[in-house]
Length: 471
Ligand code: GDP
Image 1 (cartoon, protein in one colour):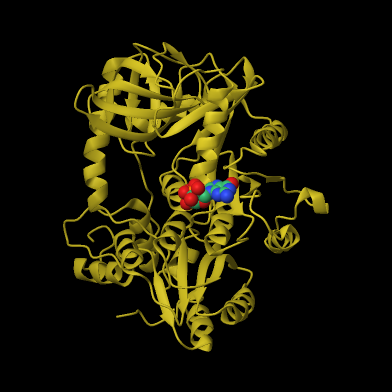
Image 2 (tube, protein in one colour):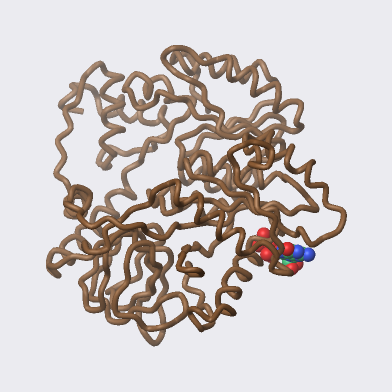
């Protein structure tokens, strides 16, 4: 307030317009401060001291890497409920156990690795696009390929379309598993046409998408699926150095009564050895015990491997970054500082794009594409909205419709909006309770309408900063 020579109350009023309820002594995020300054026609120079974790991250990102070899591909299963994601994953793992290569029962640690014919694939165990996008919202882009599971007796369904949108927003490759192929009377051509409609034209039809016919019941096509994943991965040229200290993400973590905090980490790149010092989110420690997804104790783990480790001083969060460091004091400093900053951050509001702040976000250069998620009562309205909304694109800002579907607004939509900085537009629909709660907590803007021209009017106004703030 004193730097801008503007009354604190005026700044608070501006913040409220942006949907940020601040008090006079509250910490606000620097990008929020920048936005407010723009509104008072002042430019801020932001000076930031980087955190220890940021320094570490930079060091890891810029380090010399030498001996690059192919790393296993990391895969997530998405698709409509009951189309067989869990069953397929189970079948893949039991096929491998039957092949006797690892010779053990898979433990549930949040991710698993299967090897056959000297080819290795890492599967993330938590199916569904909500989990997938929640991780991505935290910056954890673990997945190389999404296996889109589509039941052959049911075809492309609403959650299939959502899964496609989430995969595309993440920019990952999609391989389709046409599952339940053992069931009689499946109309495969109909499903191919549906896939083609969503820009997933099957290779069999001359397109780019690998479609593998599978059955989690009979085991048909399981090896073909692994082959297709390996083939797709080959094209992606996934390389890593297994000699550098490991870094990656926490997949899941819990408190174990016997072992204390245990965390499953997925190694993005490098080597993790028993006894190494690890920083994971706001926790740190020495790796006391390390197990692979078959529950076998191991001493060394490398790129794309999921391992369960114990020895951390607390329970990190899924999606946290981890680093293998050589200095335990540095790990401790980073963890402690992280805890302090987390407290600050929970006080500081972040800026998710909303209709009210859109114009100032455009002006501040924070937004160039306006991402929208559209929900409407019927397919007809969805089509009309898609057309009208796309036509609103102007030079300064391009309208990008991430997903447009019939049906009520779900928590998945909100997570996608959060991860992709999008606004949700609902036409003749409402948000379910969980969606509304999450949106509120994350500052995701949901706009509900019952007249189409109102939507385009409001958007046009908001793009030029003329929209009256919503009560
Ligand atoms: P998810 O919700 O996608 O994880 O689906 P599930 O793996 O739980 O499977 C839903 C139902 O479909 C279960 O009753 C499975 O036994 C059945 N199912 C899964 N895959 C197949 C398949 O390939 N063939 C047949 N006939 N049934 C399957």
